[in-house]
Length: 90
Image (cartoon, rainbow, N blue to C red; front, side):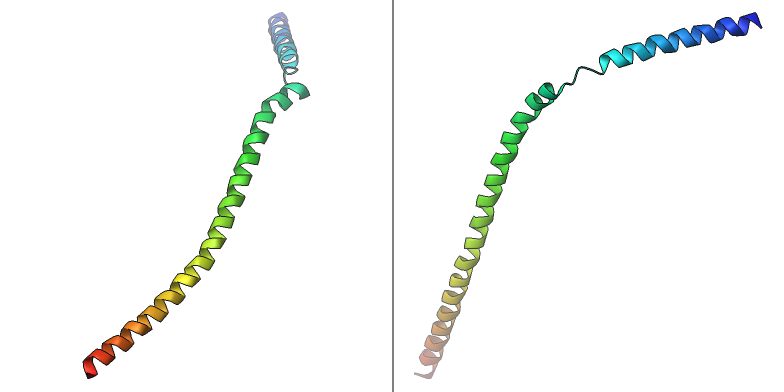
């Protein structure tokens, strides 16, 4: 019985040492440190959001331009059809 008690005591002491090391290492990440780490990311996120907004504006303006091109193409197609018919009948 004496052998089991010494083994149990060794595990208890080992667990206490490991536990105390884990508790002392956990205090490294303070709020200020986390804020310092996150500040550059906030700037990059803001830049990315502004670039996305600009790109969305550019894309929506392309929709209007495409409508104009389609209208011009349709009228040109009609003009060419009229010219071809006029040229064949003459």
